[in-house]
Length: 510
Ligand SMILES: Cc1cc2nc3c(=O)[nH]c(=O)nc-3n(C[C@H](O)[C@H](O)[C@H](O)COP(=O)(O)OP(=O)(O)OC[C@H]3O[C@@H](n4cnc5c(N)ncnc54)[C@H](O)[C@@H]3O)c2cc1C
Image (cartoon, rainbow, N blue to C red; front, side, top):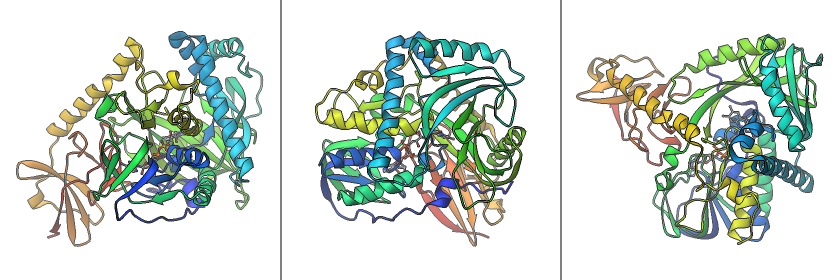
């Protein structure tokens, strides 16, 4: 494996336009914070309805989770429908399926309307049980039964398959889709430019006061409607958002293969290594390309990215004959207790604040769905999915919440581990070029990174809620295990919910 690649095929194959930083106070009818799939699609829906829209992005457009997604656009989201039926009833399960299908149709409609060249195609989604896990077929059977009750177009098969590897069973959901997410969003950005949407990059939303938002550089933007699409909501203390999500890391790799999977399916593993596998359309490559995803774990479990990617490469090699790994990377998404996203009114206090978050690794359809729901709500229209996905709903069953609350416990464990770990003294530190570590600086812990002849010495506490930061040597970042904030080695926020940079001082390397 080419160590430290950490770049997705999507971002390597598309160049997006650049936009200026905000350098003055301004106002806008609709203000969208965040330029991933949710933010861009919300900007789109409002702009086509004739609103004056401004979008601000803390880094560059599509530099968050969307650039590292697997981009399967699917209503098949694990064995979700039996879970939803048990916990929320058949009507909710049915409604959720319909919501996802309507978002897929909306994507297809937009692709056709604007003729966006993004390799969009309809595929069947398939959850497979590994050949040696016959017991898993029982779970697939239960889910298949619910498909039948809800008239979901799909079936279970245990016959011989046309895959390059054996399975014990496959649950198929027909008529789903996949695309190249950055080609799609590049097309959307062009549509936004045509609709006169104002876009600012390197402009971070920091706080709000009524109908005014302040940026990291303290410019003010007044708005009528605010859409919070920053992945983890940047205003998270309100409404206890920090307590609502678990951060899940996942890994992806793209390999050239001599044994591709059929073109019209995308796969998701139910058991074993649980690998998802999809095709990538790339006519310039001599061999077909496959994207593998998997090995998810919670943010509080600190794992070495290179080792995870080696493991992913190993499991991928058990499925297909792969000649060469071209891209490998890590990404994170937000999981909710009841497995449904948070889309709608941000809180009960501000009728003009909306949020789209908690996509449970299914943000393609849900990012687009968020734009359909939120633009309806802002116009005072009833939307049939509003209640089901209301961020102010009861967040889950007792069992689900109990499980979700292991998050603070894990965080406390990782905090204790960090406190008891021994760290070198800054005064005697000898770091190699490009190396980082936590070090003792008098009575406090600091993060230290060597860049040539200088050390960047940063505070080791996340500016969001004060958790200790872990050094990520592959990305050269300081990562927070609590809520997923990330800072580059100079201390600049690159992923929220934190909005403030770390305190940094620069000292000479001696
Ligand atoms: C490994 C993995 C595989 C996945 N595979 C799939 C899949 O196959 N299908 C699927 O549907 N989903 C998948 N997902 C989930 C999906 O990728 C995400 O849910 C989705 O991309 C999230 O989009 P977003 O716009 O909400 O967030 P992001 O893409 O993270 O966008 C948020 C943007 O907001 C910006 N931002 C943050 N804070 C601020 C601030 N304060 N001010 C201004 N801007 C800010 C960020 O820089 C970023 O650009 C996967 C996720 C992972 C981790």
